[in-house]
Image (tube, rainbow, N blue to C red; front, side, top):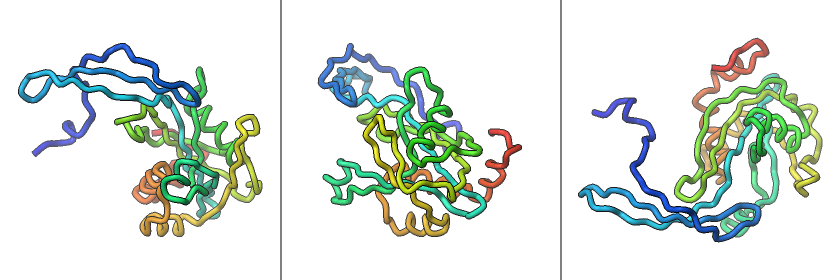
Length: 212
């Protein structure tokens, strides 16, 4: 039986070509040719396109006094085209700017998208959302906020962004998760973490608590 040591990502033996630029807009798209060793020792040649997103952050914002989470709604074209439900429910998230630390980016995104700054914030885990196509690498944070201070609308004006902060009880959010009421990956991952770790959240967000 395999143990915890085997439950981890590993280093691959691979040769990767110089990329060929295919497109560059909000994101850069490049094509790579790579050579892997097959199970029989023969080389496997693959061609893959990568959409370069880079480092991003997500923030699960919680009001401990009110037992609420704070989410946002904003329009997402991909969701609109795929499911017909483009008014997407989300956690706070955004890109890490060049030279910026993830924690700094998370604080900035909270202020931009929620209109409030976290009182306490701790990093909880990292993940890649779709490593078969994207190089997006996300750092997820847990944050305490005062939901009573939320504005009706927020968003970074320099990005022509409009977000609508909303408050929902943690119990209602977890029920919605179990019923499959949202298809947003970041939100689903954050709520699944919350369902597993809810008993520790107050300890983690105490003003005197240290990050673990």
